[in-house]
Length: 464
Image (cartoon, rainbow, N blue to C red):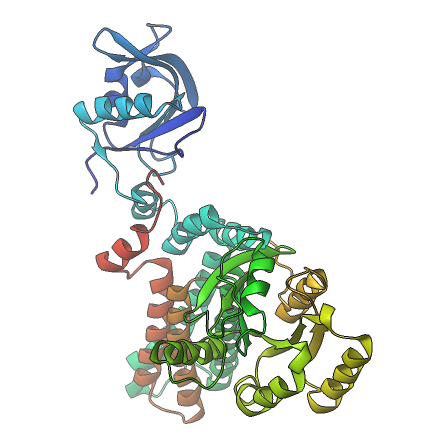
């Protein structure tokens, strides 16, 4: 049982207003020790919950600031404990002074995510909802915001609870048969169990498969910018980002390592990866950069193969030999750069060549330097990403921990299906069913270890 009382600054530095959160058994009495209400007859300990009290924070006889104190009583608070929130002016000195006074009177500084961790430990939310709090704070687009809100409101938790209930129904019937095995009584119709397990498998598989979309929405669709040296890859990255992120030079082999950055296009986050130019080289460092280029190509969902239009036919040969075999399952876009230097007749010739030789690719002519064709390229990227429109009712997995647990649960339910087909003993069936339940419970935090909790909450903001 948690006994100590914690406090933390919950607002970012530099604002006009700052908030300090206090939570724990002594939250109200400790806050009262440093707070003098305007109406001295209304102490915090006698105040009703969900009230605001105006007054002063006092350091002995010296006024630190005029503040508002919000009061919440357990279990009806964010953490499930007695809590106060002190809203003062945003001066860093004032905020630190209030913190010092709280600590001097019995509080300790909260660890990252400790308020949300207490909410989880006190049953105010399950672990998947707690993790959604961090995702909501970190959301950078409408889609990531909607997914986090859905999970925080319990959409994912309800789906998991329903799955667990159905699995418990299956295992209870199977185990009931085991109890009466000597009497040859059948409680579980195998055809009905198979139909139910098939239904459960489809739901778990759908959740598992949603991770590819969820991961792209949360972390950005990975786009690898590939091409030979001096094709204009770094110039394109700088143009898309609207800043000088990568060094641009007419010297071959300038980019020797991977450069990454994120940009939001039309509400979709893209993670652009500028790579070393591909060419034959004896330079050890450049060779390592080229090796990483192919690694990033394998990891990307979209590949922009940047081609210097003037020598396009030479570069298309490299495309056929080394890129196409590794980009079979990817969206491949041929970006003919420096198009401002080429006559329209040559562009038309290249279009026909691409249509005849590379029908599975999409081609576009741009000038990264002159910033022409960039809007058309961005539209093409959105089409290539092909991400669904997300609502707050959609359940999409974005968390790696959840994905791994669902993958294990899917393996367990597959063993249940195979066991039913092969008419194996009920005790083996029950073991696989319970393993599936275990992995689903792991997502909700019902079987989670302290180490897992530490790894989750250490990445939270202070004050949350």
